Length: 199
Image (cartoon, rainbow, N blue to C red; front, top):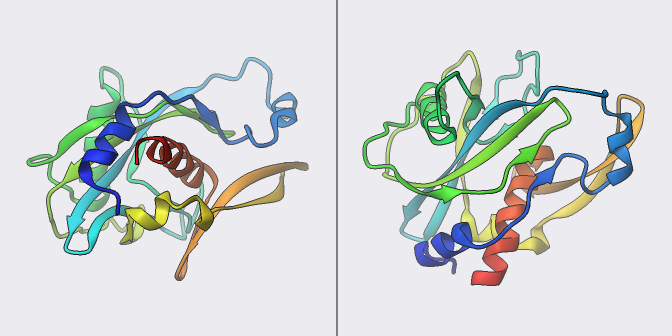
């Protein structure tokens, strides 16, 4: 079982940046030249339960223009003057009503670059038990997944699809009715690689 101490050590361990296209490196040539990456961050919110640590995830609202219905960490664009941690906490408060009181930041992971022109900083934190209230304009559902399940690389598969006419590979982590894939799954994989070293 992955403990808080193992998780904390993993967050502090050496890692490397990731991207939506690092499983298909040749995909980079299809990205626009001189594209501008916008900073963003997400909160990898971990809560202690009687049967171990769990990670809070959201299912995005189906009416959204970008990534409708996809599973994601709470997060979003970084506002001017904000740090990645401040952004992650603000977005988690707005999207799932997570109060900042009692949140313990364990650290940040290496940035993840998306094909949609964001550079995302994952912020890992232990959070207190709370009652999530999804912001219906953005979030359809809030749910939890055992950290042990997410960190087990045997639960991850590689798949591929065409994106704007070009083949791109990505990780998937099916969990019950939920299909975790893309940037979220890739950031989970990055953390799992660190946990494998520290656990």
